[in-house]
Every structure is written in structure tokens, then in C-alpha cells.
Length: 193
Ligand code: ATP
Image 1: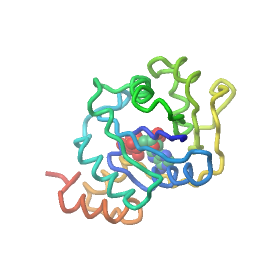
Image 2: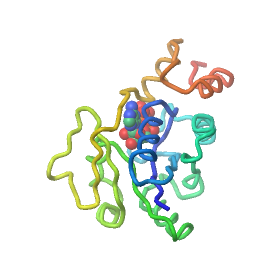
Image 3: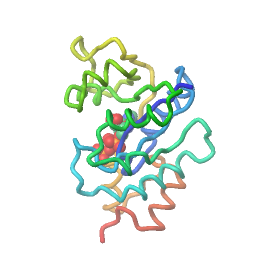
Image 4: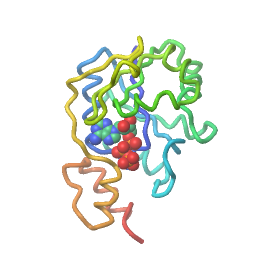
């Protein structure tokens, strides 16, 4: 079983994430994809970061009914901030039969040298990259375990854009699945207090 791992804050999940996830399970040799919710990404600031269980619940609503996609809260019980290599080491011991592929945009590929135990990470794991506008990979970004999928359809929306839209009272329809919008509205998430 080859499992794709898509790390992120998902604050909140949006169609940009979901389109990539679906591509990976439909068009590559990945059998299933897990969204790994990072309680705190060490490269991001925690201001405006919604509680991790709320973010996890939104993801569950977003992928309901798709048995190739799953959400995973493994990082909630690991020391914080969470570093991918520690999460991977833990997953290796828990699921020794699995093969792993890290799914990430070319923007994130470019940050890999800043990640904890970068060398171990890129030598031990496959990275399945998709293109993000403005982030072309060049020779120094490429390594043998990198597979670059250049035809992944993209929607250039960010969680930041969505949070700002909600604060301003704008509709986020078509950017976030309807079930997630219902939860955001019902619980008053991201609305200005
Ligand atoms: P924020 O705006 O809060 O920084 P984000 O929308 O970039 O959030 P993350 O949770 O940081 O979302 O994203 C998780 C992963 O998804 C990251 O690897 C990020 O590069 C990628 N990603 C973010 N937005 C998109 C998008 N529109 N299309 C494809 N990938 C995306």
C-alpha cells in the first residue's frame, strides 16, 4: 500500500488542497492519501490558527464519502512544534508495511533544505510534487526521490484569503466544500468576535 501524506495547517481546508489530493490518488501510484493536520507548523505563525480539532473536523466533512482520502491526527500527540521527520519515524513504526510519498507543492519543495533532518528526509522518502505558480524548480531543488507532476490542475486560493473573506463577510462558496461552509457558519469560525 502506497500512502501519500499531505501535511498542512488546513486552516481551513479548501478546494486547492482537495483537487491536489484527488489528483494524487487518481493519477499516480498512490493508493490512498492522508491529510496530516499539523497543530503548529514551525514555519508559520500561530496567530489566527484555529484549534486543531476544529480543523480536523472540517477536513473530515470535506472528504466524507471518498474512501481513498483520510485525515490523520497523529501530530496532535507528538511534541510541538511538529517536524515531519519525527512524524514519519513514528508512522514507520506504527505502519511498517506502508510505503510513503510526501505530497507537496513546488513552493514547499523549495523550503525543504530548512526542514529538520533534511538529508534523511529526502534520501528516505519519495516526494510527489505539483507545480505552484511562481515556484519553478531548478537544478538545485531536484533530488533522485523527487517526482514532479506537472499537470495537476490548480486553483490558486489560500486559507489566508478564505479567513479574510469570512472576516469581511464575503461568501466563500465554490472555494470551500458546502459542508465545511455550513460548519464555519454554524460555529462562527473565523468570524470577527
Ligand atoms: P495559509 O494561507 O494559512 O498559509 P494555505 O492555504 O497555504 O494556508 P496550508 O494548510 O498551509 O494552506 O497548505 C497545506 C499544503 O497545501 C501546503 O503544502 C501548501 O503549499 C499547499 N497549498 C496551499 N494552497 C494550495 C492551493 N491553492 N493549491 C494547491 N496546494 C496548496
